[in-house]
Image 1 (cartoon, rainbow, N blue to C red):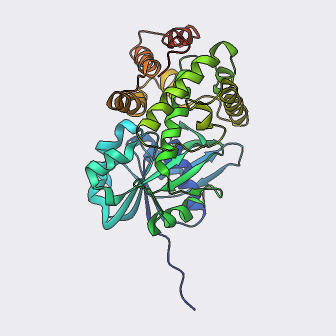
Image 2: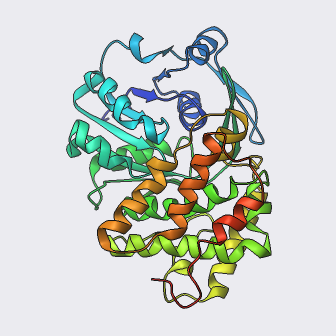
Image 3: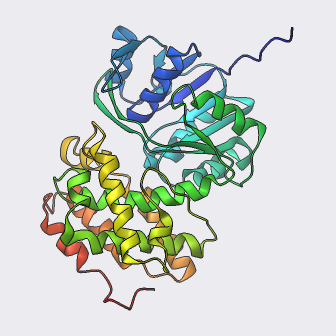
Length: 350
């Protein structure tokens, strides 16, 4: 009888909401996982008490090695990079010495971070992953896994490969419905579209579902989604649908009714989750730290300028988020009215 290949040892770089949730399920499935996190108190808690996962899918605690980036020793065949997008470059530089000779890094993040990883590590070492499940870092050693969502993996250059198939098998220990795709960039660009909507919801203290459900803001959300999708098309990307976000509903030829239907689906999806607010909102309102806005929506503005696609709403949204980050503006519904004022007049959209 042929022995089954052993799953790879996994280094999870960033043990917060995303990395902690995925890593805990991999450990529970019997995989060899080591956590790395820059928050020393989180690392200490994992070492002393384990990593506790709480939420509607049950509560459990896993034991695993944990260390700060400075303490990492050895090399790994597979690294899941789960840091905030703005930390991608320094994290890639720090983890590079800990990759096996043919080791692979999977970007399990928001944004187009495979581009940055390819610059630092080489494109041949990089895979892309898209995730949309609901999770929050609650306190050192504790992560809320609040809602299932899409998990997708693939080659940034397109197509299917043996290595992306292996990572897909691994991710199914966390999300049985995980998808192996030949178009991971289509998912990541769609997440930028949905992400733009989430950044807009974080201008207020409303929950995601309540914010997206407000009739007076629906036109702003619709045009914001359309802006991102226009840039994606200009960049040669075919966006992919997920969890209620239908990119086709935000394409130039789509009707307003189609966009409204997609927003309704997003409201329904978010009402089912124990995670009521976005990680963006938590960064602004709870953790009082900078968001991923430049590392996510900055790409939309960048490629919009490159392809001659105007992005007035996205540009204004970035500025509003910066105002909140810097303490110049409170979280308030009035911010949505200011964002809406950047909408081009009807009929003048690009």
